[in-house]
Image (cartoon, rainbow, N blue to C red; front, side, top):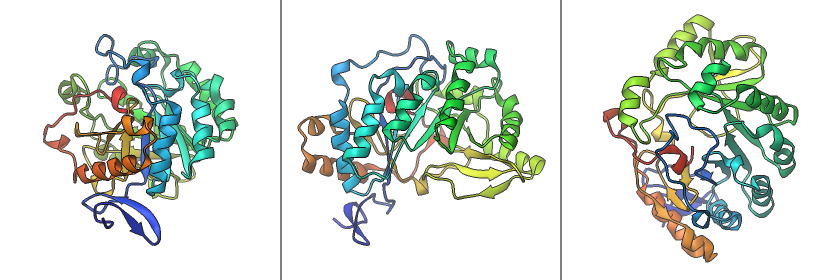
Length: 339
């Protein structure tokens, strides 16, 4: 097939393109659906049965998938969960991916609770970039949102990661109406004197109770950005590494930047270049739709030709865009898909 659908070549390099001509460059890989926090919007208490260990992709399985993906033009991988660091040996996986595949970048998203003890191993393994999810600057509120989290533990990990050279260091903040939306300005102010990339995220209708959560907790961050631009003189900026959906702005003279991820108020489907791989080996071309292509059998058999064919099938299934703005929801939880 040509580059209009499935696999092809562009400029002499292999590509993986969908029916809309979007080139897939990024693969988010969940290594576990387990987490050491219980955030209500992601993994609330009592609403989840975890996958059995034998159902998870092994690190060799994951490496086989990434090897094939990299041959198809995927050049960025992000390790996610659940919480990736609750699975033993993740630094070893990162080192293996850097050693045995041709992806240019291996990044990770974490809640930061276990970061301090793993930073040195992650840096030594060759981790290129790090994102930490932190939904409040207030210790008691942070604990209330996460049920069990310690903000002090997270910030110690963040400081150690910065000291280990894992920069630019990104902080993801899911903005929730009535819970932490009064901290938006404080997060912007934090970038004035700290070399951080603070990214404000809109709530998405994903998981159990998604419709009610969206109705009660959603904040339109496009409107927020307009206000912040007027209040702080934010100027659009570019040049940050990565190919994700965030749009970045900076206060004049600030060390850090502010990003906005707005899947509802200003969706970015037209430029989406990512697939997601669940911890059990389901390849999802779109977060919003419960459509996936199984890779586990092919990965365990080390059948690279079959894996390539499955990637092409997933590309053919990638939709033009989501229907969240029209009331659609994704029933499977984020911890199972991979955040």
